[in-house]
Image (cartoon, rainbow, N blue to C red; front, side):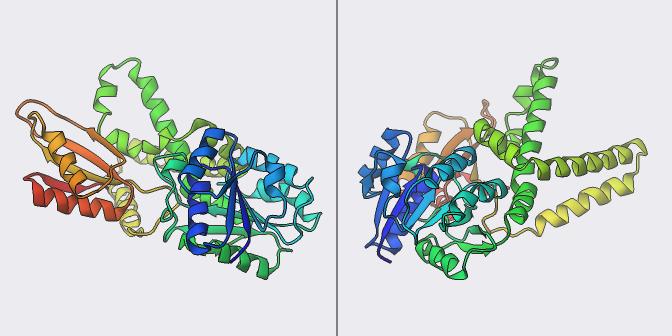
Length: 368
């Protein structure tokens, strides 16, 4: 497709979408704006965009597709700004926000001017941020949720999908309300629970100094999503407050049920509770990309001797396998430590497992 695309917000998501469009539609011109001018400069230098624009007003003129890749509160403000501009009548405006109902409602100002707005949510991410982490494979096989209003023509939705064809994502269309309910269950609510576990542990640690040390291993893994951006999650929770209040009420009922099992010392029901949870969890798709970015971790048993870490990472470097994070769970004299290496994709993890097996004598296992 030929045309002009304007990306507002040149972080991981906006940058990756720009790369996907450039790959699939090389004749298109991609302009970009970011409130952080350094991010915009870097995006141009890396070839993520073709042009830098100084402000949204200039970038939005005579554009065929506008992608708002900004936090949800800023997205609403940008929509209001766009509604005051003389946009091209055939332009499609879309966003990438994690909540949809309030954003789609705010886009009424665009619809009143005959401008097509289609809410969007690419359900993929990374543990790195910024345009330097952008990659054209980020959305591959991920779900990309679209929430067009009832009056949006099917042809416009098809045109947006054509623009986004290079993402290789799985497009699903639903109402904004259904989107917020589903993502509330599988993304927003788990972030609240992870944060609450960490907060409770923090309070208990005030009276027991061993807790932070004992929590350094598996506890960090099961609560990893609690390290997400506080600013972003504040806005998401407020945008989806009705759904989350309902889910929290259900959660309280669930925990009261567990409490009752403990009070009655009901061994059979406690066993059944964990068995049902295990069965449902084990039946979840293992290779599908879901609402929360997966952690592609490799656990390596390593002895404690000088140079062991550089030996392993050096072998990975020889095979040009990139890592996103590395840490040691435990290293003591005469006891094998556990080196946890994180990767961007499942393919990289598999390559690393084979590489370490070929080059060294260390045992490996994948994360859970």
